[in-house]
Amino acid sequence: MQLQPQTPSPARPDPLAGRIVMGINQAEQFFRLGMEGAGNDALTGTLDNLILFLKNHPGAAALDLNPILSEILACQQQRDWIQAADLLQYRLLPWLQQTILFLQPSPASLEQ
Amino acid sequence: MNSAIARQRWPDLYKDLLNIQKEDHLDISWSDTPEPTLVCDGIFLESGYDKSHEAALQARLVPDEAPKAWIYGLGTGALAAKLLERPELKELNVVLLNRQLAAYIIHHVALPWLDDPRVHLVGGAALTKVRTPFAALPGCLRLADHACARIRDMVQLELSSPFIREQHHQKSGRWIAARIRENSTFFHNDRPVSELFNKERGSHILVAAAGPTLDQTMERLRFLRENAALVSVDAALVPLLEAGIYPDYTITIDPQPAIRTFFDTDLSPLANTALIYFPSVDPQVIRTWPGRRYVAWSEYLRRLAADSDPAGECLFSAGSVIHPAVDLAVRMGAATITLFGADFSFPHNQTHAANCSQAEPFTRGHATHTLLNGHGALVATTPNLRGYLRDLETYIERFRDHPIVWQNASRDGALIQGCSFLEEENAQSVHIHPSQRGR
Image 1 (cartoon, rainbow over the protein chains, first blue to last red):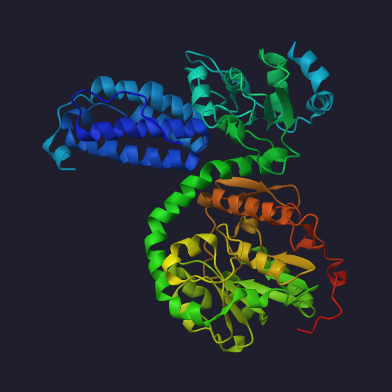
Image 2: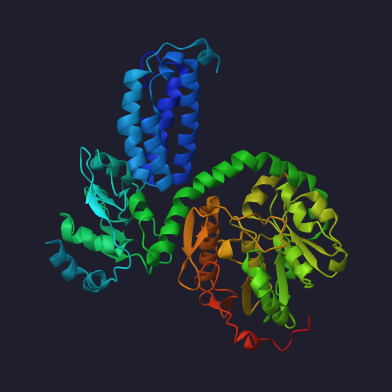
């Protein structure tokens, strides 16, 4: 089945931000459907993009994502897929959208 | 209310739920989330934010017009409620995967749909195949009890297989297709595996894999081998040769270059051993084989080789070389098949038989999942190995009405449904076909 992003992308997003939003939505939906491998794959790719995003935006890097990411990774470790999906959809995504995803594209991001 | 309905509608199942031995204490509580949900042993059964939205997503796995559907896992009933909103749905089977948890839910959670005549509660322990269309609750799969582990694994396989196949194809499809083209001279000139079919009719065939228990069962294998044919998977070849045992057939399928190490030994004593290879394997393995060679296909390889005239028979292949080895034994006409080293797990904290080139130190990383072994105890495994086991069990199930005796030589590896155990005391009384030549 084709998964659709449920959250609209930011109006003027960094190109990487759109991929992060889409990746979070995909991981969350795969986890809720019991498709662990696909969910883990989407999550891994999304975290890579997030790290790259923070690297491209030194100001955003000061925002501490560690607590929420630690919770998500702990759920992944425990194979608690539903709680992982909840954390992605209802905590990480809104927080990212409110705090960093509306940052202007950095030159580095545009080169990706 | 739930209890009265369940007792009346499914008396045997309800009795089973009441009588269940509480082997493990389940820690059940409600989550401290905007929409509380049940949390069992730290695992969320359903969303703690929006159950209905989550159920709508899960329900999309069942086509809108389906008259019949299955749900694997009970949860607090949100998915069942969502599916029952569909007037087209005439039958909904809800499979209970953890009886202790199900008993708790029936006694403590409102399930207003339980008296819907379309609903059937089904125990998961006796199920041997995944029914479709279905949706599943990941938390309930995670919490499945041991009795339901097999159907849980099969559901997970069903859910993950499209992704695994796609990943495999994306990562390897192109170079495997190139490898097949590289091997085309071999497979056009070598014999088709079908020439071996019915060659061992009525025989006892031993299938040697490279799991750790091959070491402990090697002497029994040596004894039985006197009157049985021996099929070795590639990884078991060196351990067998080190023990002075020469197989009649060796089978190899993996396209990875690392399989060369399975053949990194003096092969000259194997002039009478047939190699059954898939056209995806390293050409050096084919080229250096001293004996007869037979080519076998999988459906996937045949699709990849569409432009190379891939004539010949397929053998059953679902990720492990044990699969085509067992299928070969069946197609050769075995009356009895005894599996050695088919562990699908890490008994004795070992990854492989000692002399296998892929043996490596056992680490915690190997122990991500568990399986029941033949003693009823848990043994460490990985999701991949567990999937290979379930695919083998499904294959064996297909022969339930055939007069094939399936045996597992060890209890220390994974319990294989459909196999009896080759016990120490009856190892000598295993069926031996009179037409068998001494080996």
